[in-house]
Each structure stands twice: as C-alpha cells, then as structure tokens.
Amino acid sequence: MAARTRTYTVVGLALVAAVTAGCAGTGSGSGSGSSASPAGSSSGGAGGGQNNAAPTESNPPGDIPDNQAFVAYRPTGGSFTGFTVKVPEGWARTDQGSTTVFTDKLNSVKITAVSANSAPTTGSVTSKVVPQLRSQVPKFAAPKVSEVTRHSGRVVLLTYQGDSTKDPVTGKVVRDAFERYAFYRAGHEVDLTLSGPVKADNVDPWRIVSDSFAWR
Image (cartoon, rainbow, N blue to C red; front, side, top):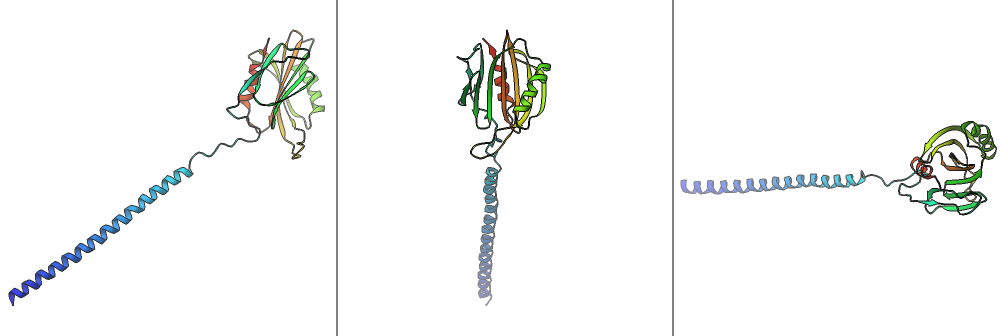
C-alpha cells in the first residue's frame, strides 16, 4: 500500500506541473499580445507623424511664387528707349502709346516713359501726381510720398491703395496696393508702377523689379 501511495503522489505532482506549465504558457501568450499593442501604437504614431507633416504651401491670392523667373525688358519703340528693367517672365504684355503693362492674374507691372523738364520731387509728386491719381483710381487712399534708394540711385516713391477694375467674368473687385517709382535722367522720366492685392506679400519680387531698373 505504501508503494502504491507513492505512485499516486508522483502522478499527482506530474499533473500539477503540467497544469502549471500550461498556465505559464497562457501568460506568456498574453504578454505577446500586450507587447503587440505598443507596436500597433507605434505604427499609429508613424501615421500620426505623417498627419503632422508640413501642409502643402498655399499662397494668398496675388502672392507671386518664390520660384518666379524674371527677364529683362528693353523698349524698342516709343519716344524713349534708353532704359531696361526686369519683369516677371511669362506675364501678358500690353502696349499703349508710351505705356507698357505686364499682368498676371491680380498683379501688374506698369512702365510709362515721358519727357520731363525737371526731376520729380516729393513736392511735385504730392501736388501733381496724387490729385491725378485720386481722380483716376477708384477709392484712392493712403498716399505716402518719399525718397528711396535703388541701384539706379535716388528715386521718388509714391505708395497708395485703390480698388481694381471689376473682373469681367466674376464681377469681383480687389483692394490693391501700389508702388510708383519715378526715375529721371536728362529730360526723361520713367514711372514704374507695381500693383497687387493689399494682403499679398510681394515685397521681394517688387524689390527685384525696382532694383533692376537701369539707364542705358
């Protein structure tokens, strides 16, 4: 009887060991499952990283692209052709008498060459040009006249705001900001007017254009 009791005891211990091992295996499997969740979270984190990527650039209406190329414009007709200035490449060109205009969407570069007995001053622009523009530009406002330096030398700058003409297709009117530079040499004046929507950031392109003006 003692030997048989020992046999039962051994068998019982073996069964307990087997059950314990099975439970341990189940616990290990649960551990693998829980370790997979962080991996999934990590994958989700990568997806979140993609969602947090820098958004596609979207320029406000009238912003000239940073990669805009510029080409030299040299007038070949009219009363005076002794100058050159860079204008945005690919813009539509319109000629009317002594004035040439380059346009693209909401922006424009207007170049007018005239004869002048004397160089423009802040006083002459204030007393003569401002009243003319006030009668020509819809809702003309905020005129400011100053002298600035460009590569060609000292020039008179007039900045102001006004409404654009109504778009023939959409009927929309845009509030524009204007920069008018008056260049002068030996009886010749060239007025360079740059315009675009008030909220557009075209400081750099307009600087490229106005700095590029040169007498020939």
